[in-house]
Image: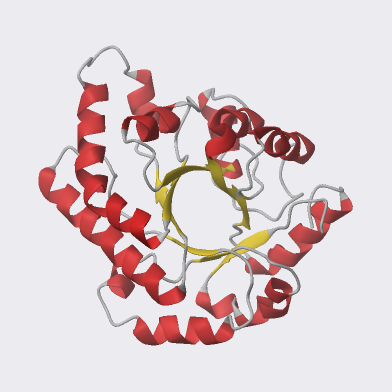
Length: 272
């Protein structure tokens, strides 16, 4: 049995075949990026799902998808927008059923603007909770019945506890926390948030998923591991402290960096 955590990756459809051998050499977790866009979800994606399943024959890791996120918040104050978001998440669950997925990544509703205006609009906290509940409640029961978990990923989050408090208010049904290392590093350097390892520790046992990417703290780089300024030993020490078993997903802009990133972390003695 491996003594170090096993790395997985987020891959678009075009890069699945090139990484097949790597994905099958160990029970590597996989996140499918091919089902994010509305054009795909509103079209006939059955052929894409069938081809995906064929390519993944023999894959033993956990599998999921990055859910839709373009152009909306899970806590929109506009009721009609909430109906659209709920429909998108039902579509994401349809995809999970077809590709045997067990997680869907969704984006946090917390923003830099919202953080800096806390206290000026006291009703906002309850209003956000009501909006998020209205959006998610119709899909959470279905997800739970399917064995699918929505992973709530930090985006602009400055306070690491915000997503946990939201999920707690929603009862944690079919919900866990995701930490994106590059997003956290950006928030730390550019907006005054704590360092990456603080985000991971804050998630604790509810940590179900991590997007591993390197960055410089100025923008959402999705660089190869080792090409930015994130302190990886502190990240993996924090993961170990949580006692959780999160999906460790290398989410890079250039997929050619996935295997070199895995080798870099292996050389550091942090993962394999």
